[in-house]
Image (cartoon, rainbow, N blue to C red; front, side, top):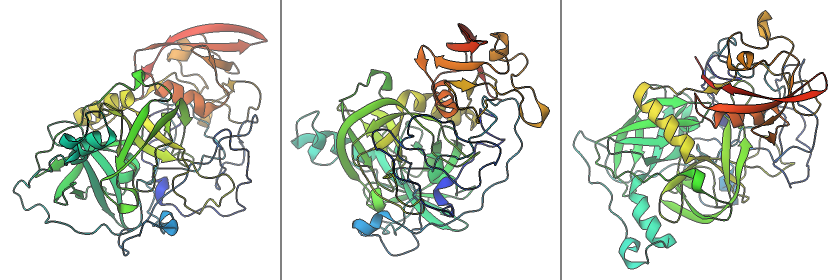
Length: 450
């Protein structure tokens, strides 16, 4: 298990009915806004503090309906609720066992979007179909231009059609290696189960795919494609990305496959936690203003060398809009950094599971002071600090307040989880804690979740 998870890492916030109750009040848009959701535990509440950021837009829908045209209404597909799997109780893989009482409204780039994807080309018949070839821009436009990069990358970007018990949906993906592994978001394929996924290539041909591993906490999944010899995209290092770098987003927004948009990196290390209580993902995100819409989820975010530096995963919703409404691009999109993607995807390919770094504490979500407080007790009578865990060995005790991670302030338990999840098992990290009014630094080695 992993921090703040209660058993399973499966989460499917993209297809839930909107919670009842009044709409979230508008707040200043300078920071992304956290949105409340119904069904929270009555004994806890969000920490007080500065106005939270814009809510992350849940986007879901069915492709069993007629195609959705690229119009203003197309960003509001009809939700298709799917049954939620049962979850076990919390245990000691958890970094944070006390979940936020009001979870963030999940927001994807619209990995699952309403509207039919037109059947173009024949499906796989057991023989290999012709792989897509780069477009004319690959040779007729200067190297490093958007047109050149797009023409070269598009043959390696696919559209995923997923059929579940309550309907179907579409999302995006891209070729990771020469073994036919395609990377996408977990929320895109969460409803597939053991069913075969239809993978639509950029030339319209269709082949079959099966999920070989997925992880809800990082919102990543790997699909193995059969029947096509596809070229992988090169993967760059997100650690080399800086604010202002030009980027290109590729995917199938609103079911319109092989769509290319461009923009810049707007911010780095943006803590984003889309999902509902017990079903959250933790992303130390790259923020971009490249147009990302429903259907882009799982598609690549490329740098100007055509390398993948992120996986598009979430968009922000305009503050004050209805939790049940769906909107499109407002210039605030989020991608999972490629360094995290490479680590997690390699684990999913090898074992079907991903390992999460943890420190082994439960946090007090009702605390409203500075920093993040370690709870007095864990759930079900467990201690708040896991005996023998990283935090315990570093001397952290129940009631301690964590004020900084690697010298940078933390003000929210979700933010702390994101920072820890962005590291690797075995890395040493430094936390600043306050106990009895005294501040001190402690160092610990991150362990892996069970």
